[in-house]
Image (cartoon, rainbow, N blue to C red; front, top):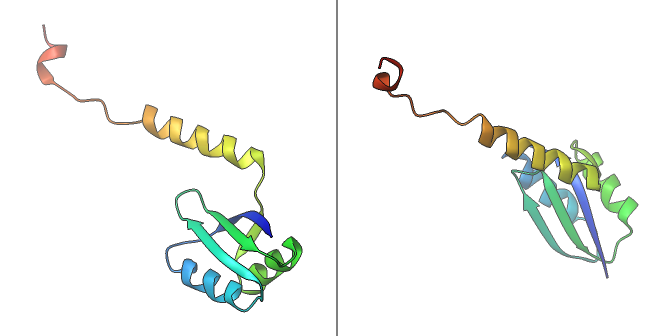
Length: 95
């Protein structure tokens, strides 16, 4: 049994299309989809290239997950946390 991790560009509606594409392949046991990080984990017997080909045939942009994607996610979360709105108080600036 093999586990394949992929980065798939998708919106909320694409998850259903993704699952439908993968359901046509024989030997797939489990599909996990993380919408925020656009990460898809497929567990089963088919070769990883067949899985990628099936997803691309469904009209979705996909590629294998790489460690570089993890770094991009960490940077995105860090920058969004740093850009959180600062609580503004009128009285702190006029003393």
